Image 1 (cartoon, helix red, strand yellow):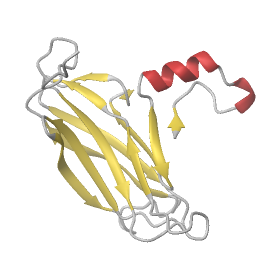
Image 2 (spheres, rainbow, N blue to C red):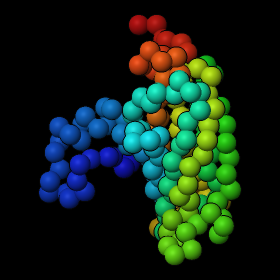
Image 3 (spheres, rainbow, N blue to C red):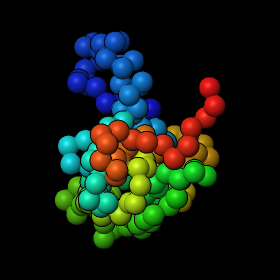
Length: 162
């Protein structure tokens, strides 16, 4: 897991900040690739004004050159789980020619019709051998919440009984 904190210096770790970041969903899971996602200046765990029913999602995918990464998928929430709304193939044409560790660094426009959440999933065909025997490359972000109805909060499509 990668947790977004104010510092990346281990001896400066603030446990209260760390716990709050985890609680506020400011982290991503990775098995190889490192993914950042933002809408404007807001990221994972934040609620974004999406009253225009369209958002520009800034995504950056980084991975060591030996880690295969070839698919980027964007999901938005729904009653029965997430719906895949965009799939991109990652290859030499999407990588930074000056820095091949950067596999993708661009924005994607997504249309939405009601309050929802958005996550990014990155995968690669192949393995992480010899570092993780048989492990397949993947990364998943925590959600960014989209407020389409303009009431200032994310309203889930259903709730669980208490």
